[in-house]
Image (cartoon, rainbow, N blue to C red):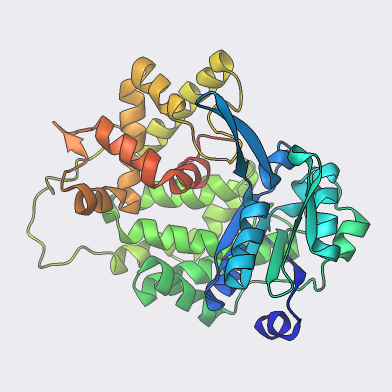
Length: 392
């Protein structure tokens, strides 16, 4: 794809449509391409709630006057015009409404957009610049909105991204999670067997993706083996199993491969480590599954009282009022749940950055929650959706 981008002349907008199953690295490939060109990139998460003004830009009242806030499209065009090239990555592009798809047609074919918020003022790409739009989608899943034929046709290429070879997946897991190679190999072996059941035998609905391999390796490598059983149950079995039969099938595959026993051998704590509890780490007061279940019920209560979807803004970031409400109404439940982020090591980054620990008298501090909100918003959203799921 580097050769493709290089081969096309400047003054053009290039469309590339990546498709493949979840967790195969489509977004990672897109952002890596941008980095190869030393370019900025802007990510748009496809959603039926996405408005044309969200991606083009909108007017805002500020200090008694109005100012125009650029959207990712206008910012990308400006960056391309200033630096020669820029990238836009649109995740789940088939979830975008047809009206928003149409707004991209002129950009893909004629290298300009007509800003609806500015009376259809034309915003163009310079003849010396290049803009690359990369859309990602899973063709096996029908989008909330149909991908228009005229829109899809404007993308030059549509490569399929599949799962890597076994050895490559092991290398990816080791590089991205920092785990030991034998841990990665054990997880990859199990993942590929479960994936086979899902793709060929159709006995399991969800696929054990490369992304999940990396996340699981990251978590178990940064936590005490004491939590291994809970992590296997919540990150693999409960996440992939749609019903009790599927969960049972997954558990049988893992048992057959002696998955937990093998991992426990490789995850034995360093013998040089002195016994005792790290003062920066305190064991949760309840099992992880119970903490997640308890917090999820409170999230459902929040959705009922405040309104469903009122936990994130239009850009998809978590809203502070979500945490503020829990701090005021269900503080203990919030603290217990946020303490589970220790498994991803965010508390270590917090200490390195601020010089403070994330606990006071054994409980999560408000300062740590605010730091997560400001500095790890997208990671926290992913944690609440995938790692310890409480959000739909």
